[in-house]
Length: 157
Image 1 (cartoon, rainbow, N blue to C red):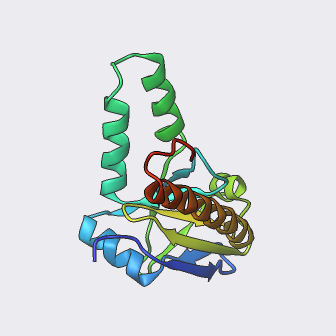
Image 2 (cartoon, rainbow, N blue to C red):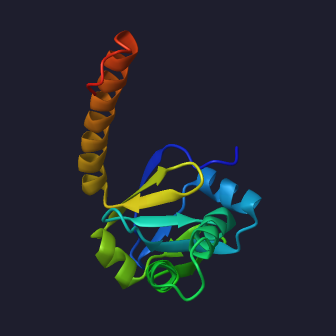
């Protein structure tokens, strides 16, 4: 499989290391990643992480803006400027910097959530709250889509 899927909760050890879930390490290895590319999420109090596919996606996004444009410069600063490439040790562990941990409010445990082409690293309780909210929004969206399908002339969502 070449996608990050599922959710795993792991504990930081006494040295501040955390094991990347084995299925995620497999995806990173297939991607040819030498380390773990990680940056504070722009949308959530979590960390976005991945390998070369994630870096390529970020490159493409930034390059879609005109050179030297304000939007391009801001995106580059927000994504490249806050990113870290974490070394994965032989046991599949990484050390999250204090800056990354502070952004996600990580203390002793982390939750890894697969998002297909990348994964997100959360403080487990924050993830639980986020998933509850996301599930509710998806249910509401499903109801709105279902009601439009039942009555295609209706313009109400």
